Length: 163
Length: 31
Image (cartoon, rainbow over all chains, first blue to last red; front, side, top):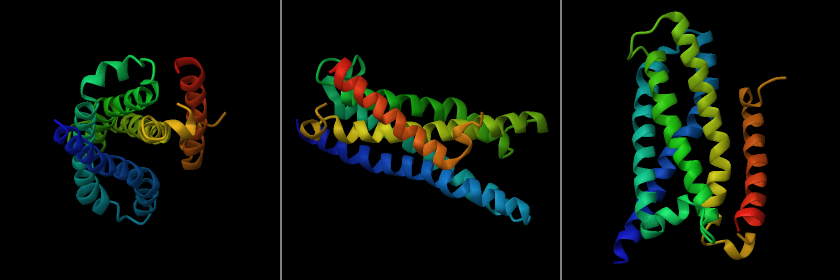
């Protein structure tokens, strides 16, 4: 049935735009804004009202993106993840997206909970959490660049890039 | 040496370099 992959592709794009859009918002906008807001004492607006909402959509959009991507791969799921002949391009994209999903739920979100005071943490633990969450978020920005290249090039642009 | 991920543009350049490396791995090794 062709309806399932069509809807999966649509959902994969919508959720993916929300996920990566918020990732870029955090890295290109919020990090610098928070630094400036902390300097003039207005950071509470971001940490209390903006960041928790952005993180909510960020982490769940990541899950929806992955699930819709898995549905879209369908019976090619194993071939993609085992980087089988002809599926290596989209497979590398799928692996990068999976690593990024892991980073969101295992490294970014638990550390953000400490930073934003949703989980109890000492000042020292908060400082460590801030560094881990920051670097993991930056790793995801770096990984998103090849991830999007392979997601876009894996199937439709095979002729152009020779993949 | 400074961590390139501390800078936004260092992060973007790292991503671009990784893209080129993975492109050649997929094209020439994994096929």
